[in-house]
Image (cartoon, rainbow, N blue to C red; front, side, top):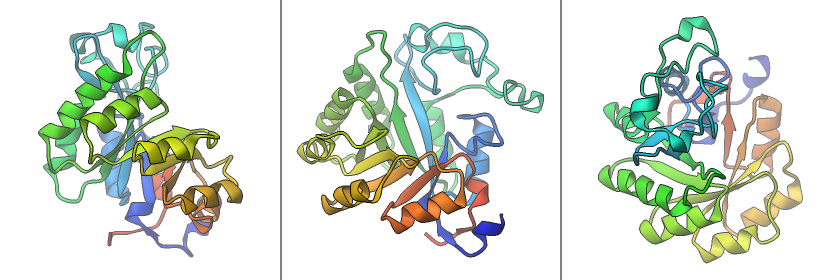
Length: 253
């Protein structure tokens, strides 16, 4: 990319949103492999609780957009989803890409040295699944792998409160489109170090308010180098992008 040539990005500044999802089917092994190959220091992905207690790496609340069907994710078991084709919607050459569990993705990270850290976005659907149940399941997986490098994030405050109780030392982040009036107070109360905001809507005043309260400011979903540079100049520590390969990443972390 021509406008990327003047900047050498640090790996820790770049997070691949659902993997390298501009060019590969989101939240799949091939998308995460491409993200790692790009040099991104982090990947962001979504995790949901299935009916049998398994944790599925999947964004949408229902099947339909990236996999055949229409059922709510929370109503399905791992045996229901394990063989789904979640690649063909992107392109036929990705036919046969299968869903991953949370544990499988952790194992992928740990299989090779220097694979990206993982930002888990916990999805707490509107059909009554308790946020605390998702928190318990995710805390169990994280605790089982002490070397797993991750940040846990969510829009759902009940989930974040539960995670803080379960894992007092775990890095957490509150997600919002724009900063809520009480967002920083909530983060301070529950020792939530990260604030993840929509970079398209972020202004200088909001950025400075987050930074002055000693929170780590990260922004989504940034697919142009020009906006990424502007956000970094405002104090943003990390940009989440569908296009990690567009960033000239230094391999030194």
